[in-house]
Length: 235
Image (cartoon, rainbow, N blue to C red; front, top):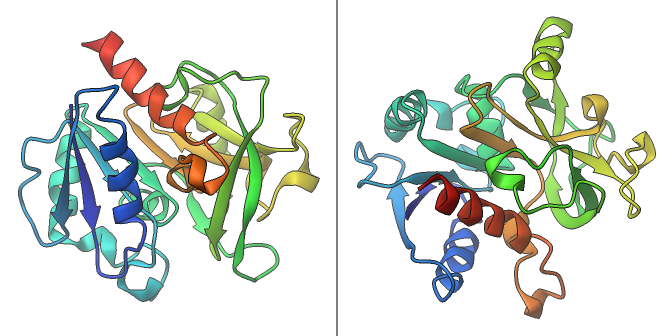
């Protein structure tokens, strides 16, 4: 399995993502490469990740300029053919701007940048990124964003539910979904979604920042283990 982590001007979580995937080589046969935003070649990668950060300084809207980076044409074509793509935080914003995922990410209700640990729960274990998750257990995963409020018009929300596209919701430490546990005002406490084909995923929390014992939290590793678990079954 070959992972490609796209680096945009302003990305700051790319190396964190690479480190987590590199550290998992002992358990899984995988290769990791960085892909520059001006590239036109995905280098034969099987899984593309758009990491967190502040691509192009978040000018206009977060992800609005990165959506036009040359490599995004290849990412879109890759996704259209069924290739797996994951966007985390800024990567989620870019995927929405590129219309690879429905909805958009708006300014937090507080109008402030929020950086803290939150709890999320998997809505279903049928997604590639949640296949090893207990849907009745909360995961403690950090967030760091100013524009993380998921929003979609009524018609789009109906389709999101119709096609079971919600992957994660914000919850309390007991895995109870409640608006009080919603850090940014996202509609229906949504923290992560997929496309209809279930091969493109976006989430605001940062699993790569909760994937090492040195950080005192390894809940995020379960999401990466889910990816490998699903792919190994698929293959």
